[in-house]
Picture 1 (spheres, rainbow, N blue to C red):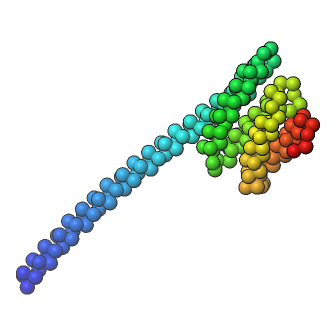
Picture 2 (picture 1 turned 90 degrees about the vertical axis):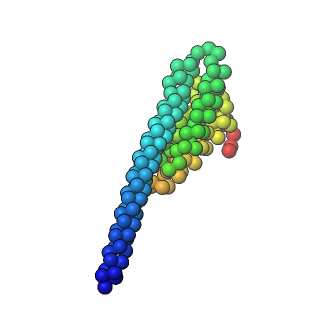
Picture 3 (picture 1 turned 45 degrees about the vertical axis):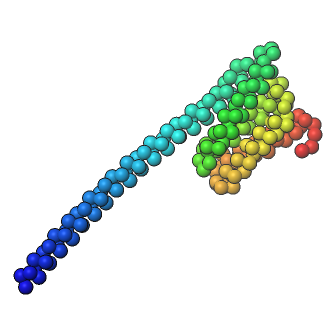
Amino acid sequence: QQAAASEQARIAVTERDRAEAERQRAESEKQRAEREIEEARRQRALAEARLGDLRSLSNSMLFEIHEAIRDLPGATEARTLLISKARTHLEKLSAESKGDPQTIAGVAEAYSQLARLQGGNADSTTGDTSAALENQGRALAMRQKLAVRYSGNAAYQRDLAESYLSISEILGARKQPA
């Protein structure tokens, strides 16, 4: 019986050691997972900061710089280049904004502003009504999705109505039906 008790004690010690090793392994995995979660949070914050920077740059190019040069004689080529660069940035921003309604709304507003700079009734447009319709169409598509998904949001509904109005103004400037 003493041999059986010794064998049970040895098995118990072995099981205890195995359980302790498993506990340590689990603790190590938990710490690794926590580090990965923290790294993912850091990467997300970095991506959001980059997105904010890109959004700021696009807004600066569209609103501030264009306003500063719009009445300069011979600035049409510079305005066209500025619009082209802004559109490139907006395409990148649009691709990265999936799922964030504020960013989507901001990108839609920027596309709408871009369309206003390209064509419409104002003297300060580049006269490219086809590009204006295309960009206002992009804004419209984004705003339609927001208006449906967030049907109780009055701002999204107003923005959608503004896109329809802008399209009608561009078509009026062309004096052609869609």
